Length: 396
Ligand SMILES: Cc1ncc(COP(=O)(O)O)c(C=O)c1O
Image (cartoon, rainbow, N blue to C red; front, side, top):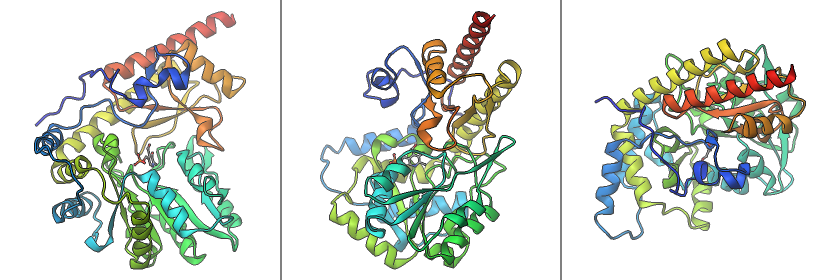
C-alpha cells in the first residue's frame, strides 16, 4: 500500500500544543508551526482502526499490557534493530520524560552529579534540576558543521559524585545517530566509573538508511547491565497524545527498582488506547515507517538544497536521524538570540524551537520540524527566504 504524506490536515482547534498554543508561546497565532516534535501526518489507518475497535467496546476500565503487546514490542526491536529483548526486561512508562524523572529520583540522591550532553532535548535539564541533583554539562563538540562527543571533556567531568549520564541516542536536536565506536567508548566509560547510563532512544526508529540505529544496551553484556533504555512508538507513529512508552532494563535489580517507583506513583496501568496502538504499530508498522522515512528524507534533501541555493548563510546540520533539522544561523548576521527569535517570528512568520532552549551550544541555532507535507515545508522555506531578502533590502 502507498501512504499519502502530502495531504494537509488542519490541526487547529484539536487542543494541539503545536497549533493551538502559538499565542501562548510565540505571542501570536498566525505562524507556520514547525516546532513541537510531533508530525503533521495522519496516524496510519491500521492503528486508527485498532483504537476505534477498542473504543467501540465502550468500557474503559483498568488494563494491563498483555503477552501480545510484549511479543509485538520484542518482535519489532528484533526485526528493526537486531536487539533481542527478553520479556522480563520490559516495563511501562506513560512517557519517556516521566521515566527520566522517576529514574533520576530512584537511582540518585540530592547533590549527586548527572551528566548530559548539550545542546540537547531540554527536559533532560529539568529531570536533573527539579530533583536537586547537580547538572554537569559535557557539551558536544561542533567542528566543520559536524557534531561529536567530546570524550576528553567527559572524562574530565567525572568524579566520585557522578552517578548517571543521560544519553540522547539518536540525538535531538543535532540529528546524530551515534556510531558503534562512539557508543562503546561512552558506555564503557560509564561502566568503568560505575555511572548508570540512561539511554533515551525515543528516536531510534527514525534513522535514515543506510545509517543504522545502534541500541546502546546491545553492545555488550556489561553495558546492558549498566544501562536503562527508554523507547516509545510515539515519535515513530505520531502517538504522543496516547502517553505510552517502554523502559527496558536487562539488569533485574535495576528493573525491580524501576518497577517499584512506577508502582509507588501509581502510573503503571497506562492508557488502554496507547497499549492497543503500540501493539498494532509494532506488529504492522514496518511498511508505513519505511515510506515515512523516505518522505522525511526527501523533505530534508529539499530543505538542504533550498538553503544551499538561496540561503547559504544558514547551515543545516547533517540529518542522520529524527525529523528535526538543526539550523545554524550564527553566520547570518544576527546580533543576539533575541534578534534572531524576533526575526523568525515577526519577519518569517515561523514557529521554530529556539536553539538556546537546548542549552550550551544552542546559541544562534533554530530547530525546524520536517515532519510535514512537502508543500508546507516549501511554504516555510519561502517565507524564510522572503524575510532574508527584505532584510537585505532594508540594510542597503
Ligand atoms: C529525546 C526525547 N526524549 C523524550 C521525548 C518526549 O517523550 P515523551 O513524550 O514520551 O515524554 C522527546 C520529544 O521530543 C525527545 O525528543
